[in-house]
Each structure stands twice: as structure tokens, then as C-alpha cells.
Amino acid sequence: MHCLVRAATAKRSPLAEKRVSSFRRNSVEAQNPLADASNVIKHCGLRPAIGPFPRRIHIPRPSHPLTIPSMSPYTAEFVGTTILVLFGNGVVANVLLTKSKGQNSGWIVITAGWSLAVAMAVYAVGRVSGAHLNPAVTIALASTGAFPWAKVPGYILAQLGGGVFGSVLVFITYYAHWAETPDPALKLACYSTAPNIRRLGPAFVTEVIGTAALLFGVLAFGKVALGADTEHAAWITAVGTWFGPLLVGLLVFAIGLSLGGPTGYAINPARDLGPRIGHALLPIRGKGSSDWGYAWLPVVAPIIGGLIGAQLFVALGF
Picture 1 (cartoon, rainbow, N blue to C red):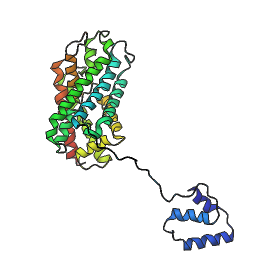
Picture 2: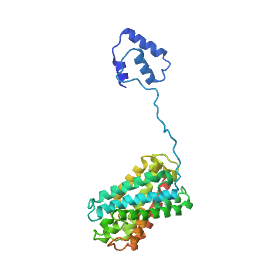
Picture 3: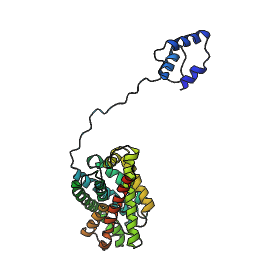
Picture 4: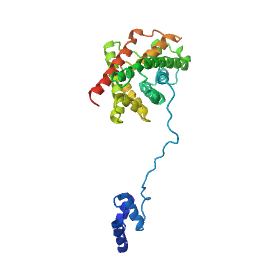
């Protein structure tokens, strides 16, 4: 716009004024103000403050077409959930285990680590399976008719398997620290969740609310912000764009900061039950009970919360 200002304010001779008027009357580009202004400046010998106006912007296209992944979506769910648990429970172990470099670094580190774990896992497998990584997500999407029920069992088994395998990798990574940590509860916390106040009713409600917020938020990203047509397309759109996984990770970060205090925000049966099975099977020195009396809650409550979040999204007409 600087050249327009200079063209408008420059002092011109009567001859230059006459040439400007003549050019404007005869210009075949009069319907394009930017092109006309650029040509006026050039024709009249005025020196623009910036370069000439571009008539066309070239957007380069990828030199190679996108390839269709050959990985099975079930394998992708296994791999994605493994990444999720490795980084997520890994940051918990880093904060809680004795003599770890990150010992006592606090809740903010745990919630940040979990949010990045979610983002990295979604980036890894989002274009292959949709990166559900969570039985509550799979069941909720199927309940809206946007995901086939026939695929639900396979997805859930893959997610649970990834949860177990991810917990094995955490065990190996922090192998030297299990014996150094005297508190069995801290060791269990590196695998699964538990409420700080042992009241199952409030803990159940907390997990329902947190998972409902997760489903509602991700569907809103895809359908409202990015314009997808269906609930499943909304999920795929949210996790399939280059910035979508970061948004999902930020949503998990917000849930952890705001709602994670009472229970540790499982909001994912595979993230809790898979590692809990790993805790029961692995030779962790000095471990205690795997707390099976509580194990049902972070499975059932997130499933109910996911159904509520997805159905509420549909009922409100988004």
C-alpha cells in the first residue's frame, strides 16, 4: 500500500497529470485496482516505495504424491498406545522414583509430559487408524454411528496390548530405580491411577466429567473449527491435520491441570488397565498390590463419560 500512498501524494507536473488521466480512461485493467495502480505508477515514471504488485502467487505442490499407509489400523492403535504409555507413564516415573533426575519436579511436569505423549502418539498413527488410542473414544464414536461396531473389539484389544507393552518399556527404562524407591504406592502410580481421597462416588464422577470433556473437545475441533461433516470425520480431521494433534495434546493438558487432581485423570481405560496388568506381571522389586479393587472405575467411568460427551455433542446440533 505504500506505493499507492506515494502515487497519491507525489507532486506531478501537468503533463504527468494528463498522462495519468489518459491511462486510467483507457486501461483495460480498470476492474483490477491493484494491477491498475501498479501500472499507473510504472507508466507515469513514479518510483514506488515498495516493489511492484504481484499478479499471481505461486503455491508449490509436493513433488511426490502422498502414499497410502500399508500398516493395519489395529497395529497402528497398538503402536500409538505404546507411545502414549511410554511417554506418559515415563514422565510419572521420572517425577516419582527415587534418584531420578526429575524427582519431585511436580504436577506441572506430569501434565505437560502426558499432553506431549498424546500429541506424539496422535502424530505417529493418526493418518492410519484415526489415533483413537482409547477404548472410550472408540466406543463413543461407534455409538454415534460414525465408526463401525465390527472394528470396536479389535481396536480395544490393540489399545490394551499397547498399554501393557508401553508399561514394559517404562519398567526397562527405569529398571535401576525400582529397588531404590521404598514406597510401593509410588511404584504403582507409575503404572495406573488412584484417588488421593478414597471415595469412589466422587472419583467416578470426576472421571466421567474429564472423559466427556475430552470427547466433546476433540469433536468440536474437527467439526466446528475445521468443518467436518460427521462425528467420525470430525475426529479424523482433528487428528489428521498438522496442528490437530497439538490441539488434542493441549486439551489433555487442560484436563490434567483443571480436573486431574482428584483421581490422576485416567480418562482412558487402556492407559490405566493395560499398565495395571503390566504392574501385576512385571518383576518390580518391592512392589505392592495392583489395587484391583479400584481397577474397574477408570475403565467404566471413562466409557460412560465418552458416551455422554459424544452424545451431548450430537444432541446440541454442532
